[in-house]
Length: 187
Image 1 (tube, rainbow, N blue to C red):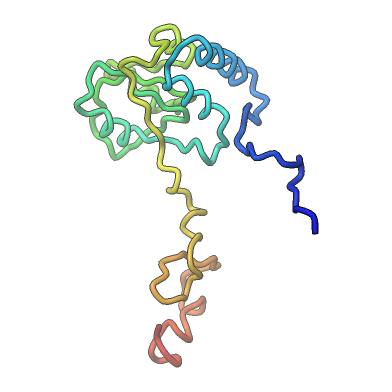
Image 2 (image 1 turned 180 degrees about the vertical axis):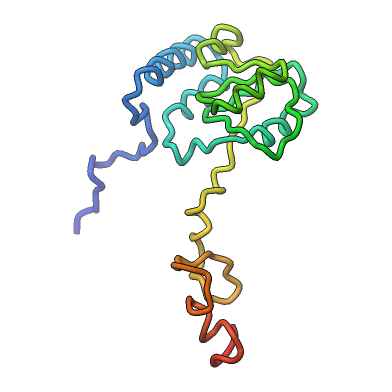
């Protein structure tokens, strides 16, 4: 019996070492942060470089309301998000924020600048804070995707709150045996 090798041989390093994306601007940011990782002793830059490699799923967007909540009591610091910053209509007043992110939605950018804040790009951040001093590194909620609701023990199993893949929520769809007393039993 031989050993079962994954494609690529005995390679145990399965994390990304470069972004999958062909985006020129992202590639330039990677070049910049590779340089900063090499030339500074800062762990902050290492984390940013690692996050620049990540897939879209792992770079979940962060809403303005969450951003404002995370930054309360941290005035004078720069919020750093290696993802998209999105607008949130439920947030009534946007505080004055300085945010560095990969992307901003048009409304989020407008609301931040209107409140007297500033939207930075990562090359601007690198010039201003090369070691990440006075920066707050934030992430979006990765498990808030619709797909994640369907993961877990099978729907219908006792104590499972996993969402079933059904066409509709009507009476005729997964609502009979095991779901109501009048149809056999209720689990």
